[in-house]
Amino acid sequence: MSTRVTTEILGEHPVLSAIRTDHELSTSWIRGGDGLIGFGTYAQKAVRGADRFEESSKWWREIRSQFAIENNVHGSGTGPILFTSFSFDENEISELVVPQVIVGRKAGKSWITWIGDGPQPKLHEVKDVHEKPSNPTLTYAQGGLSDSEWMNRVNLALGKIKSGELEKIVLARDMVVTSDKGIDIQALMRSLESEYPSTWVFLVRNLLGATPELLVRLSKSLVTSRVLAGTIRKTGDESRDLALAGSLAKSSKDLEEHEYAVRSVADALAPYCSSTNVPDSPFVLHLANVMHLATDVTGVVNESASHTDIFTLIEALHPSAAVCGTPTAQAKVIINELEEMSRGRYAGPVGWIDARGDGEVGIALRCGMIDESQHQVRIFAGCGIVADSIPEDELAESQAKLIPMRTALATL
Image (cartoon, rainbow, N blue to C red; front, side, top):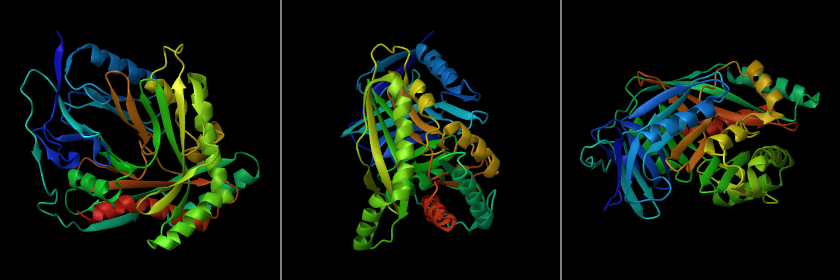
């Protein structure tokens, strides 16, 4: 027997991050006010292993086959949605979630999707998520490695680069933040959206963050991947930051790091695309606290590649040089040697896929993993190390990348 799935247009345009329903908030993917937010859980699955992308694709096909879809809105992101949060390493757990209720906004259009025979769920828009600020006391603790120990690992990585073992490696670090009061996940999400509107604010199974990096978007047959590599911290002084943007665009160290990342993405997409477009030079992406070198790589999926779906593209692209290194296989081995921590779903693919196979999947960066008690969150940052890297500079960059989560937590 089929399960009914209904999608209807909404007359109003709610602020996604401020919506509440009778179901608990479960997922989000919001950028600049547009996107998707999910409540409740119709189905979920944990996967792991080398075939986790293929297994996820098969599971989503099975779930979709159970649905009788009545979609009066149409378009990418409407209808039932699968939210995915894959681990960085194949041996860690990845999470798949199909929400019970989904609200979407895009280009001035808003809609609601719900699973089941019941009436359209009622929405409540909270004008101020901080109705009752908790004012928690936050304590910060080093994660797997202290600052000095992590810089030592950067030095070890530089030694391996200079000996010719690899060209680039991304080293991550973590910090543990403990709150004396429960962390309000929706308030945290709202804060990230407010402070970082040009990022994708995501939530899947308590992994919450604001990523500036799009691993892959598939819309019909058009593929897009936004590559970020090369970072400089902003000062807050407009003229000074303009000069820093110019220096970033000319930095041989950052351009080298960026080139490795772009090359890895273009090479990964080539077997599945009839054509690809790689701009000759990157642009500078301005975020609230940092600037990145950025390149949008685009392509058209080969019509003869009927087996190619978004899961195929995710598997081909992950991990890119932007979160792992070059060559990838060697970088992964050395990451396991040097980091002394589990990345979990940090730096893994995170996003959504609809019933037609369209979707947007980013890389889980600038994020934190909130524990089940909601009193502790483990936050992450990573830096690309190349031959010209300086450990002290990389430490400063990692600290800048921790700011989004630290700032958001401080506003609760």
